[in-house]
Length: 254
Ligand SMILES: [Zn+2]
Ligand SMILES: [Zn+2]
Image (cartoon, rainbow, N blue to C red; front, side, top):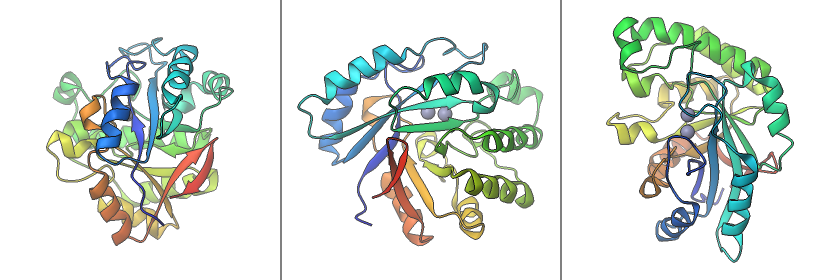
């Protein structure tokens, strides 16, 4: 393991909630000594999501090809596909494009996103209990390479609830489906002290035979690129996990 700096979760203007520019990311990437950037824009089919219908794969690939010309950075193509288990057909169609990496994430539980209005209505414990069922359905369905921010509601509720047996089942299903786990560092920029997942969940991942993880900043602004990579790498070292990237949907150790 060479310990390269790879940010496998980066949003650009092709996401409904970001104005960030691929070329500016590259400039910052060079300053921060990032070796690999994977642009993973949101693909949302939940009609309540502000990004519903926003993503345009042709425009994304045109822009990426332009930026790649003469660029001495390893730029990978990806998507962050929300609730893959609910939009299987749409996922299969998009997967025909030459993506290097498909990140699957659960952002919505039915019509609920963990926004303030929802947090006022249901407790963190209640939300998490519905959320974990949704995550299990998503990994059972599969069709993607890596599970994004496994404990996502934590970023909003600032609390984490889980039952060990439930998480173990999710991890065992991921191993069967060859889905790896992301260490998402965006929570560190939201005032939380731990990554998503935290060490306890990563220990369970390891316990169930999990080996491979990607690192993603989940940046929506150029200046956030690569933030938290060192924290994630420390966890990887401490737990003896292996950092990977994906190229043409194939896992590569870095
Ligand atoms: Zn996400
Ligand atoms: Zn994201």
